Image (tube, rainbow, N blue to C red; front, side, top):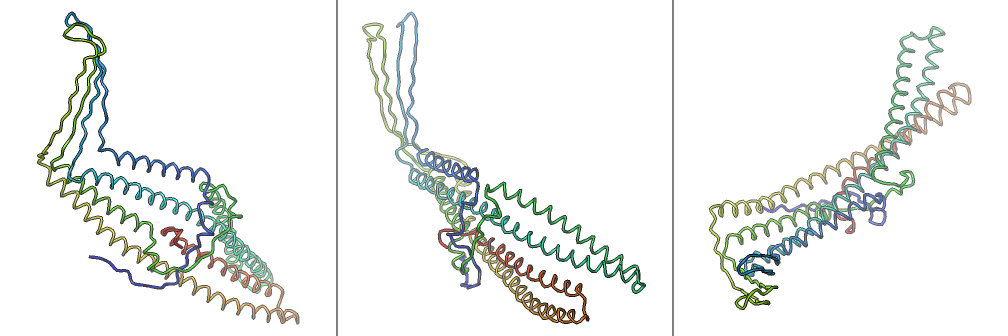
Length: 394
């Protein structure tokens, strides 16, 4: 089974590489990623040459009545020289580990960058929401004052005043909560970056298709590398149960002579080759397990492609929904601008009050803020796409 992604040219926008990078991360975060990368390199080197056996040195001292004192040094090694392809597969697997680790670190870095920009966007968004809430509070205060005058003059029942007071109190409470959330967002941003969130240049975006998204998808790339790694593991497992050959050598040197039959500088050298045929009851179980793991990884790749295709299409739908909200808001602004102009004229001749004008003006300004909020919402949805692809390919 091989899944072919359809060429959906959805209007998904992704940020340009020149405007988006690890610069937003703190030095501590970047240092941690670099150390992970260095560890991955060293782990790869250790795995690449793990088939090379160590050379052993043994020093011994013995003393007795016969033959007397003895001091010897022995250097020996037993080295595998053939393992039915296992050595080659081990070295390729080591390179595979380095590639997989590099991609894993890149995925981590992208997630950190995405989270930092997400917080920066949301700080800007919550400032707009606070401004919008203050406009709603101003309208609620106007309404409360009008209701209070109407109740005092006997034009309205007290329940209208009570409802207006509850509305105003609710807006006050929501404003306090927004201020608290803003502080929370700033503190969270400081965990990732030492920059001032208000001085961070928020990125712009360029378009990408689903086909490009799939081709440059970091997790899909890593899964492909993991599949190769599973194949190498299968080959190594099979090689462990096939005949292999080893070479062995040793050299012994006596430092002290004690007799004519045991002179100083007596040396002994031995070397040879061994062929081993391993017989293991678990052969079929272990090799079968390695093969099943390899086949499962290939199936997991197809499932991941389906999942990410659906994710991409979902994000595209979210963007289109936000764009629809933007269109409706633009229409609302046109209506409120007309109403504002009319009420200003009527207020000029005494038919409408300045309170009426101010309420419409605040409502219009609130819709203008909605436009900016929806633009940020759009960027936040597109930001989810960025965190999954190769930056340099955009």
